[in-house]
Amino acid sequence: QVQLVESGGGLVQAGGSLRLSCAPSGRTIISTYVMAWFRQAPGKERDLVAAINWSGGNTYYADSVKGRFTISRDNAKNTVYLQLNSLKPEDTAVYYCAADTRTPWRTTIARTTDEYNYWGQGTQVTVSS
Image 1 (cartoon, rainbow, N blue to C red):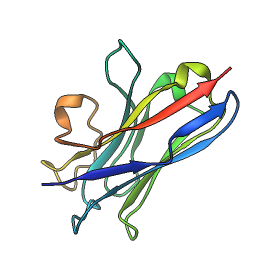
Image 2 (cartoon, one colour; image 1 turned 45 degrees about the vertical axis):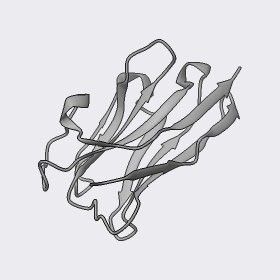
Image 3 (cartoon, rainbow, N blue to C red; image 1 turned 180 degrees about the horizontal axis):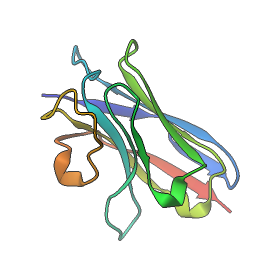
């Protein structure tokens, strides 16, 4: 069982920045897994924002966040990050960290919710105009 814990959300003005962090609780090592950040706004589906393979050599970004958000990982710290810059009110959502533990060492990026089998509880990001 993998428990993921997100942190770093909050309220920020448009144009501001936040950095989200995701780390597993306990002794779980996530360095061999594809990790991702999804977000879900009220009344909308949960959408993939960014994902990164185990080595960090392959990343994916949704078109809506390209050039503004950056996903990274520090396997020595067992942590994945999402840097959110130039935030817009439409970025307001609950952001979820997810792990695909069924295919370790995967070099490609999983892009659907079904491919991720562990999820965090989410952290709220609110961007005011």
